[in-house]
Amino acid sequence: MVLSKIASESDISIHSTFASRYVRTSLPRFKMPENSIPKEAAYQIINDELMLDGNPRLNLASFVTTWMEPECDKLMMDSINKNYVDMDEYPVTTELQNRCVNMIAHLFNAPLEDGETAVGVGTVGSSEAIMLAGLAFKRKWQNKMKAQGKPYDKPNIVTGANVQVCWEKFARYFEVELKEVKLTDGYYVMNPEKAVEMVDENTICVAAILGSTLNGEFEDVKKLNDLLIDKNKETGWDTPIHVDAASGGFIAPFIYPELEWDFRLPLVKSINVSGHKYGLVYAGIGWVIWRNKEDLPDELIFHINYLGADQPTFTLNFSKGSSQIIAQYYQLIRLGYEGYKNVMENCQENARILREGLEKTGRFDIVSKEVGVPLVAFSLKDNSKHDEFEISETLRRFGWIVPAYTMPPDAQHITVLRVVIREDFSRTLAERLVMDITKVLHELDMLPARVKAKLAMAEEAAAADSASHHKTDREWELEVTEAWKKFVANKKNKTQGVC
Image 1 (cartoon, rainbow, N blue to C red):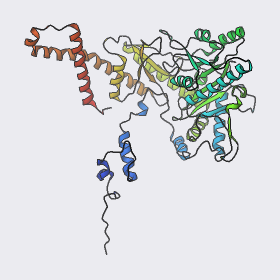
Image 2 (image 1 turned 180 degrees about the vertical axis):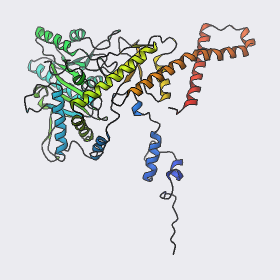
Image 3 (image 1 turned 120 degrees about the vertical axis):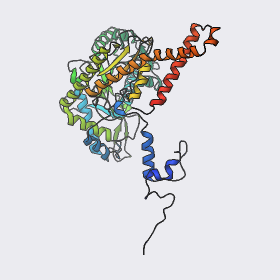
Image 4 (image 1 turned 135 degrees about the vertical axis):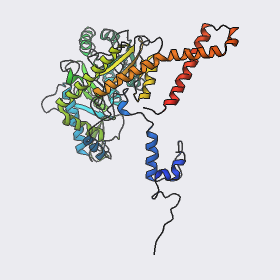
């Protein structure tokens, strides 16, 4: 006897997803749906919508790692269900974090005795790491001012105007005044002399950036340290330094080992670094290291026992995944000093190739420095016809995501484009990017001629009407602008989705 089955409307086991009803209904955007859908349909529909995202490998705006070895990917997936905070249940994962802290502390020349454990913690990124370091500085300063019988309600931090937004968040969230050293033309990092001039008795620390987000430049931490030592001697203060090495912390030790920026300088009390940038781990891992135990007040450390044993914790959040910590340990032992040095040298060399290619066009000024984070920041020599924002927008048609932005005060009249050179950005891609930028420049150069030609034709067609009306310069300017906007809109429509 032959058995048959009539498929119900909700059964797609014998149909492809695209033959089902689920692809012809809109996905919920505000409320959870009443009914379930098959896993195949859910996956396919979400995956299809995600295709509209940019390609992470071509996202040259980001410092964050976009490629890791398959073996590390597997380790991360195998541990994706482990909650790092359950230290008693996952003691090996906790041990791996401690090993990472010790390795990074030694990389930063922490003054540790043989067998001494470093003081530090893994975070979800440098933003959390900076919050924790800032809280430690604030609490130490408050305790000192209380002991001296002085007011402790107006703490401040001195930074450059080029700091990442997480410093502004810290200042606002934890009620600390942010005193910023303004930038100047040609000098786009914090000036150490001006920074020390702004230090007062209420300054909890001076924050120096090892690898500016804007142009990759390293700030002169050694000079800042020396100037601050002199001021501390004159005033009797003990103002310390925090180094925000989010981008440069995994670069300087390998290709600039003689550069003094870390715990070799006596006033540097804490350092943060992003494992998910040049630490070569996917997004979600940062580190903060303290010089010694005295620099992290005990009252900021919480102890819990409801997960099985006494566990010290100093984080802003509680639960978090273990995968990134395991991946960081993998990279540290897999690559070692030799491997990290090779990767950073490759990035530096590819940045040089890109920089030289841009210089050969004769159209750009290079804003970034050769010593620093391997990136290339550049601006147009002449932006009277087209600006950096138009170049950035047009490059997206080729798949490239290259940000354009203005500098902070007092250099806000400077606009730059920036390309971050990561591990997976090869020389071939660098050469291709220069070719595509050249194409974009040529296309933008042609735009005014095309617009004027269209206007000339329109003028001839309306000669009778325009004979009695002479357009003012402002009317011509508005007409040219409107024609250019229409031209760009038409180009977008014709090339939508092409990369």
